[in-house]
Amino acid sequence: PSRPRPKVILVIGGPGSGKGTQSLKIAERYGFQYVSVGELLRKKMIHNATSNRKWSLIAKIITNGELAPQETTITEIKQKIMKIPDANGIVIDGFPRDVGQALSFEDQICTPDLVVFLACTNHHLKERLQKRAEQQGRPDDNPKAIDRRLTNFKQNTIPLVKYFQERGLIVTLDADRDEEEVFCDISMTLDNKLF
Ligand code: UP5
Ligand code: MG
Image 1 (cartoon, rainbow, N blue to C red):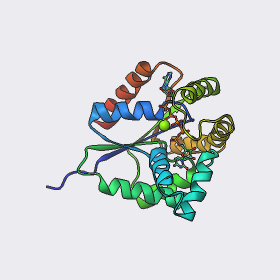
Image 2: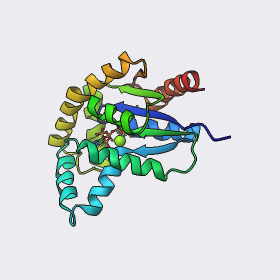
Image 3: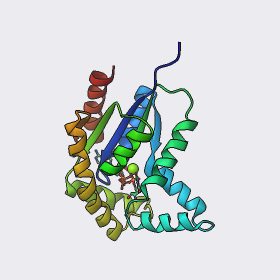
Image 4: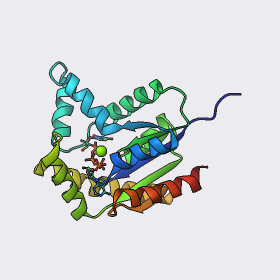
């Protein structure tokens, strides 16, 4: 008999809400494959920015804290997912960012089994990103780009949350708490809703 299609979990939330941290924990606990869309795009842009005009433009966009073009993003995700061997599940970190991307994902890839929204106050988002900027510093962890990422999140991702709510696909969790508490909620939710 053919295997069922892997479960697909999307993790969304503001910049610094803990998407990466929690998605990795999900992947580890459930044996799911982890896909970070931000990382996919950053790797690709670092590789191609000097030799390719499209990617040098995307590098500028991302470094400024704006969104890469939708079709490029979907194409990258599709390619990545196709390379994944048999998996029970896939956890996608940081995608979609707006309703348009969600529609396109469903159209071209699949309907997610569950969307996890990490709700975090602006105060905590900024504090965490500033702290990370001091320690490692991503190209987009500068004050201007952080502000743009926060604005983008409010403008585009909040309507997306509403869209998933209306379809009964999303669970909203309080991500202001410490990592372990947040993950405890996530795993209870996944145990309930997916298995
Ligand atoms: N931390 C985590 N959880 C904590 C907790 N509970 N308490 C205290 N500290 C906590 O966490 C951020 C920091 O906080 C870390 O230092 C962590 O230790 C600590 P992290 O797990 O990294 O949060 P995350 O939500 O992943 O933050 P990130 O900065 O990665 O979010 P962004 O949404 O900004 O980044 P992403 O990589 O998803 O996207 C980056 C850019 O890529 C976008 O701005 C955009 O330009 C581009 N992009 C697209 O164009 N399209 C896409 O579809 C996706 C990305
Ligand atoms: Mg991240």
